[in-house]
Length: 174
Length: 174
DNA sequence: ACATAAAGTTTGGTATACCAAACACTCACA
DNA sequence: TGTGAGTGTTTGGTATACCAAACTTTATGT
Image (cartoon, rainbow over all chains, first blue to last red; front, side, top):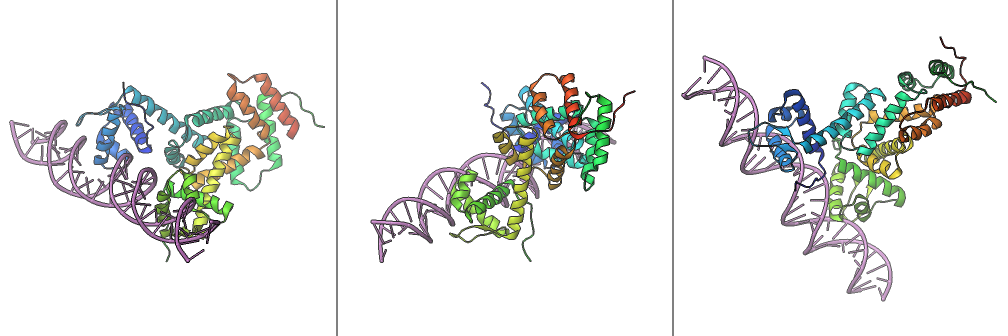
């Protein structure tokens, strides 16, 4: 039983994600609020909701409040996670401004497989956990992209600081 | 004069990108080949081409070969660059397999601003240029995502090797 | 309690992008 | 120099996703 799980369109993913956010804020989602967030008219929302209801992703009765079903909540959560991971990468690693990170994450979240998002999470963790990188390495990226060329002397100092922070076996050079 | 440059749809971007690739391979693009690459029928291609012709992005006369106009070539080149950058990041940094990198890049290329792609290029360059990272650091990422926990001793050795390769000012710890 | 404002729905229309299949053109070669 | 296979186009139809505006239901204030 239960409707077969067809892949969602970008639009449908946006609706689910918005409904989840509104549920968290207001317990339930209202058509008006969904319309506002997505920048569409209320009439467009009604049609989309009927659709999501038929797919078993939301509880939808005309003129009543909207809530996610367990399946809908799971899917919405996955989408929201993608969004958050991508935004964090764009803002926290690529150091883009928050608005740019947000708008690009909104679009990218529909384009990335779960496997890619998972790997991205691991990569972000790796940067933070690896002694060779970490927060100061990310901060130094600003330096790199705003200058013409990296300064070798500054690089030596940076590496030395890194060693000082984390310790390393004695080095030798040929 | 000249048609005002409306933002392209994902579909239109795919057509332009495909035409550019076919031009490079065969001098000109043929409807049949475009249809094959994009997985659509020839009839769908005709309609799309008429559209791109009206936008001034391709030279389109019914029953004749198809070539990009200078504007079309510029746009197609930008899209192809996005695609390549994203694929390289997915494959060369996140270490995803080539197929996954390719299919995700195909989708992501439509979702990322030029500014984000540019920053991603700088980030990839940074990884390769910074003494603290570089190719061996990327290789070690495999280790990280395939193990439960990083091994502190291995991390010390890794950092020591890095220092050995690049040299660093003498370190001291409190 | 009831008028009216606010919220939600429905209907009819647009635009995109595709398919299926009939149709038209082109070119190679017989 | 036809003729047929292959290539390109057109037509009619589908599905999505939206808007505009008429309409219905619910909620609010006095």
